[in-house]
Amino acid sequence: MIRYRIMDPTGNITILVETPVEEASQPVIAEKLMALEKDAEQAGFLSAADDCDIALRMAGGEFCGNAAMSSAVLCALKRGTENGVFFVRVSGSEKPVRAEVARLPGGSYRGTVEMPRPRSIGMTEFPGHGKFPVVHFDGISHAVIEQPMKREEAEKLIRAWGGTQRQSAFGMIFLDPSYTKLTPLVYVPGADTLFWENSCASGTAAAGAYLAAKRGCAVDLAFEEPGGLLQIQASPSGSLLLTGTVTERACKTVRRADL
Image (cartoon, rainbow, N blue to C red; front, side, top):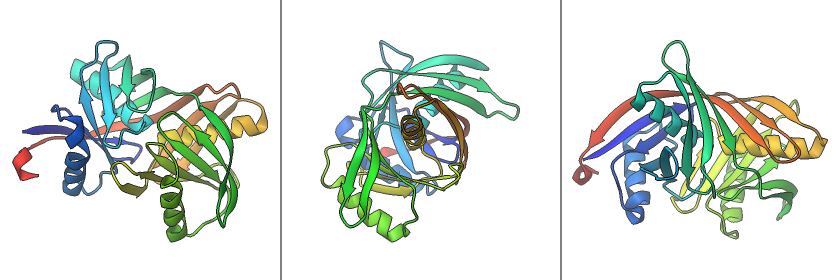
């Protein structure tokens, strides 16, 4: 049997698999679970860790802040605690990330995650579209785009970009002129998934890092994303604090033979 949780971090529906699954089989199991759970945008696999509270490997080996926050909330739920600080080892991050969670009225949790610092921020040429700023993290790179683009055009462009780079995942973050709305598109080559996500933690962090570097001062921004609000505090030095909400939707089991 495979036991998994369905978590809702600001609409970015995430499957967290609790049953041990060998790494080579994770992309296939993730694909089949996501076929069962039509709202799911990503899947990760949990395991015990000696140096932190829990370990998380995303199906494509990418980094995911929303899944890290969800894993911390799951730790709190299992321990029956209203609040706490948890350290999560996540694929795509060299060090465990710190996540602080607190229960809200109604059963959801508010979470704040110390996101990994960007490896670099620079301009990248996108053939036929000009140059866009790109924020590179260890497990994912995000292009920050401040101009409109058709959905089909964006999907074609991100696949072409992902096919020429060595990185676990790629994002295109579309910002409106007021810097209050953000629309994320994420492509994970290893899992062959492409989603216009309801929210994206690393994409929100990338937008904050880019704007802090551009303005040369700390920023504290709340972005309205399709699934709700994510807040990012970013400094020009690279520190990033992301805040959002997480709700557990369900806990399920399925026979591996039925997948």
